[in-house]
Image 1 (cartoon, rainbow, N blue to C red):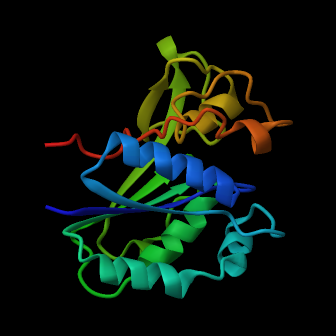
Image 2 (cartoon, rainbow, N blue to C red):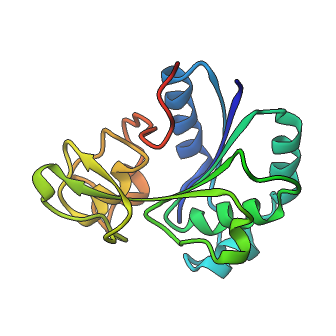
Length: 190
């Protein structure tokens, strides 16, 4: 069974951030093919900003179609969820083998789900200490080992090495620092 993951970084996620995340993910799971896309430069953090600013939809859809994967995960972090949701809505055909993963970001509207499975994740610190930036009850919960503050927990969903050193003021530089890609949403290797 082949698995393909396409990941979209959140607001200010750079190509370097995506390269670091992807390299870490590939080291952990040699049975999965990964691609990762940065957040578009020069646009705001809103969902329409993300979608209107992202210019690689055709490229992403072609990669998905060419992958021939049995199982597809379309994953977004934070504002990148808006891009993931839009990609999912543009994929043609049966969506029964697609999982749309929302990591502390925009939930998809009903017309963008198209019969895909949806997993919405938030994070909290060990023992329930602290909640991620967009935390909500009812989401799947990731428990971070080294984070307890909203911004560090927000980044713990993409980087298990995230600590409370990540803040609103420095997340652009520290969010993916020392990245150990968080793949908690991916089924265990068989």
